[in-house]
Amino acid sequence: MISRPSGPAGRLIVALDVPEAARAESLAHKVAPHAGLVKLGLELFCAEGPGVLGRLARAAPVFLDLKLHDIPNTVAGAVRSLAPLGASMLTLHAGGGPAMIAAAREAAEKAGRERPLLLAVTVLTSMDEAALEATGVSGGAAAQVVRLARMAVSAGADGLVCSPREIRAIRDSLGEAPALVVPGIRPAGAAAGDQSRVATPEEAVRDGADWIVVGRPVSGAGNPGEAARAITAGLPR
Ligand SMILES: O=C(O)c1cc(=O)[nH]c(=O)n1[C@@H]1O[C@H](COP(=O)(O)O)[C@@H](O)[C@H]1O
Image (cartoon, rainbow, N blue to C red):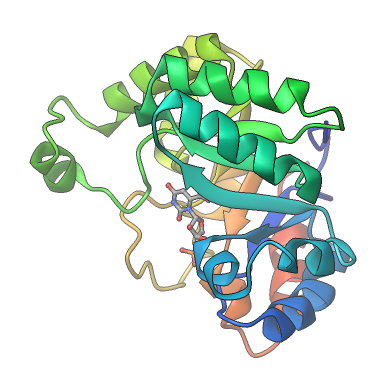
């Protein structure tokens, strides 16, 4: 399994949220010297299919972010089908519950090759308190994130996806063991867009993120390679 970075090099994951493989590949090669992984998410995967993963892997290790969420048998099947692609990280929604997470872990272990880090997504970084309440969750994002994090780790997740606002609460509750992958990252002055619970790259790493995920502030920059370099250069040791 991919190991956690011990310093700034490799902490940045660049989200390749574009609809075409050629654009994603070009972006991946530009940012690869300054990033630990590139992230293949729903937009590109749905447009291009599984074959795009191998093309991106020529530039950098790939984080496959499909946020699986279904009954245990179906998620286990999806993990088996995805295993040959060779992703270094794979996401599933913690809200799918402990049996779903345990089934994913078992399927990943039985797949017979180096398995991806299994990351449970807690509460999406786009959700604010009102959106959480609309889904029936009261008591705030941090309490819900910690509840899901504890359950997901004890069910077999290797790590968690959370916003930068909950890193400390997770570390206080679960210590250093789970890998923390943190989107909702905005360099100072960058537009938040649809993200709600955000912080800067420096704040997230200082609070205990292992990896930070950045999409539009890099992919939408005039010079994505330079944007990635500047983010990594500004991270604390
Ligand atoms: O699992 C994720 O990576 C994820 C979880 C989450 O809670 N919030 C979140 O933004 N992401 C992903 O992280 C990336 C953030 O992109 P930007 O908002 O453009 O930096 C997107 O590809 C999202 O799909």
